Length: 223
Ligand code: G3D
Ligand code: MG
Image (cartoon, helix red, strand yellow):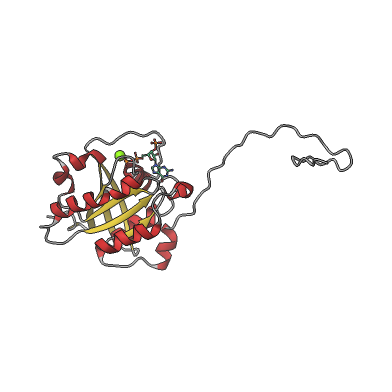
């Protein structure tokens, strides 16, 4: 029985995340599977697995098996074992790192080579991660969309750090595999509210008070 066949009433899909080291594959898996974000970088060796049970259109029970493949695996001998049988491949890059984007062509080529003979063609998704770092963005969205269009990829933009777009991306990939569309209600439900991080700036030095108004001001007028 293949991964995508029913086991009882539960459908299972194998989703493989590939892309260069530090693109954020592990962070996306951890965010989606257990709603966690670890700031400490631990390079993945080989492959790690995550399981997420979810539902689509209220009734379809799904088990999404996430295969978090090491960025080093591109040049290793195990890549075909990790990717084999995938229903979907997520090509993940870091929007602040143009190398991670440029290398996706190679990740895509290798994945297609490995999955080419599969009875049901897998779907491929281009995933821009770290969109919270907009001020450091190196890959503009037109390059992202051109690459996606040229290669027939689904496209997503998200931040494993803030959670923005993560759940919606995974649910949309699952819905695409099932051949259904997410309802508007589901899209809203999975389009998470982004919580801004509270930044504690050091307190400004005590400013002298205006003896007339009692107000403090950092503005200095030079006469
Ligand atoms: P990888 O599994 O693709 O190798 P990781 O990448 O998930 O281990 O993440 C690599 C680094 O990127 C980690 O930071 C992680 O915290 C950071 N990161 C992942 N996703 C995001 C994101 O959406 N936004 C931001 N700002 N950072 C993210 P360190 O500092 O430990 O290298
Ligand atoms: Mg990793």
